[in-house]
Amino acid sequence: AEDDFDSDTQFCLHWFEQHGWAEGVFGEADVLARAKATSVKGLHDSGVLSSSGGKVRLLRPNEYPADWDPQLDTRLPVWEALHQLIRTFRRWGETEAGQLLAAVKTQGEGIRQLAYRLYTLSERQGWAEDARAYNELITSWNGIYAIADAAPTEKQGKLFD
Picture 1: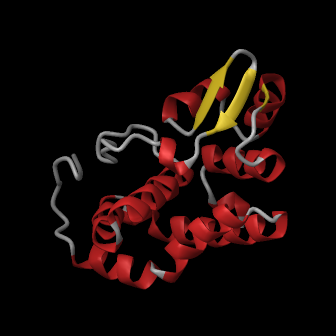
Picture 2 (picture 1 turned 90 degrees about the vertical axis):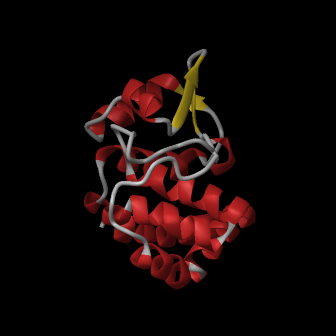
């Protein structure tokens, strides 16, 4: 259920459903953010969207920073964790994605559920490239999760250069 996700993820899910990766008007984003108990500034600060010139848009997975360390992230929506995982999986593969999942393991089930939901939404909208990204992660989930499960639970330093 949507209510199972944090406020930032709920905003992103609704925004994605309405706009995909396209820009939208700040005022519309502000109204939706307030309805989801978050703010456009907070979403921008958390690193999931771009906001400038009265326009707002969600960041694509390849726009997320490669030097991201989830243990230093003070505001970590499931949406961000999922798209960081997709970015990592597409660039470095299953092993590195598993190592990243280990660092956000408490969000693992939410990440998986969101990936399924976004896959279905992308398919329905005809967004083939987006559907492919979510589907690739879903079909590799067991392998990624096994790597995460086997990873040490102690605090890790930077995951990637």
